[in-house]
Length: 287
Image (cartoon, rainbow, N blue to C red; front, side, top):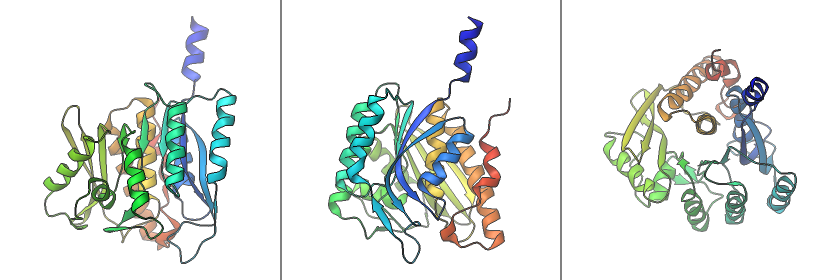
């Protein structure tokens, strides 16, 4: 029994991460993999595209991997892969959304929670690369999720309501958006990047209990690449480990605030992302 116990303690949970790989910008997979590793979770990347750099730069090159996703998943199934969680991020097209749903059909289940980061837009606008068909497709994906992590713009797109503006005067309309989104499928909705004065708020709503969680961080600069991806990765790690939402959100906030403060102080280009590498210890459990 002692041997079996030791083997169990050494088991590393796995999360399938369906997202793009950008060489520059510290976002998507290049953010998720180290964050999950720091939390003791193995990230198994299923890349939707490979980019020279994230799309916030003035130009970029991109290789769309839509044609490979089904065969990659088939190989994983053939080799007996199983996952303790599934996380989706940037998807290139409605076709990729359908492939992500197929992946959930194959590898999901009662013991495999799904987190969807519905990448669609920011600052009140849909990203230029997406259209109405893509917005509709992502809505069908969020309905399959246990947890979703839209920013305020994306939450409004998914809920079909007007964007209230980045600077929140009152949070009640945003809580109502979270509640409405929870009725479409996901039982936990975390709306990220809500500005309130000198702070950025992340609002977590848990439908089963009606609990509202507000976690704020100091605001540095005008925004950095990859912060939403980092937060989603921390929440994915917590979900896989069975951690409560509140402490997990606090961990994410501590990491983001420390990294953003350092990045702002050294004057780095916001497109390059934040210096989270120096602060991953904030995610590591003390023995």
